Length: 216
Image (cartoon, rainbow, N blue to C red; front, side):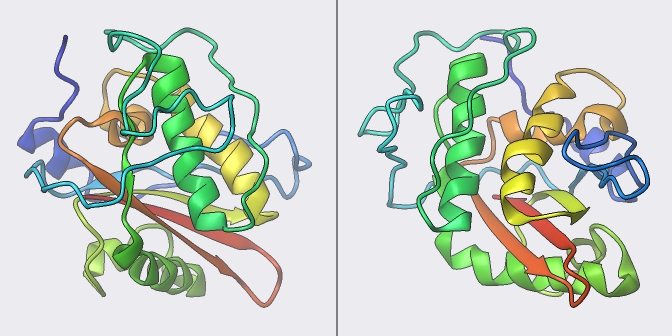
């Protein structure tokens, strides 16, 4: 299997954040949110947590022991893969992790990331910090809390469900390749040195939703 982890030099190039251009089909052109450039700081491996992901949805194709049951991991993602959004569990952080793992499994037959529960408060904090005029990845770059080794972010979306359904789909659709600024979200979602992810959200007083996914 081809290794999908990023070299240290490439990871360091991703420190500067910039606005993406992908748009959500759920928003009009004037107010459409974007997917921001991804950030990563290290490719150091981290030991997995204790709780394995297990989906209650038959559409997720995740086995109880945390393995994708769709077969041998693929060298590249299935072209045009757009899994149907699973029913919400009522917990946005859980829905976010399940959606990421749904892409990993259904679209490339990769094993799931575990939910990094203890990192979720930091992810929430970073989402708020970034929304307050500092811009995407500001909290990650400034190290305001322990945010792991890589971050994806959905800045200024219309709702939490839209970030889970639309933003994560746009991130996956970037696919493999270079430069990191154009493919970093997908690369973070599939980096085989990451074992878990913490999802955080913040809704601004104006109603915009900022969503952060921190990978460790």
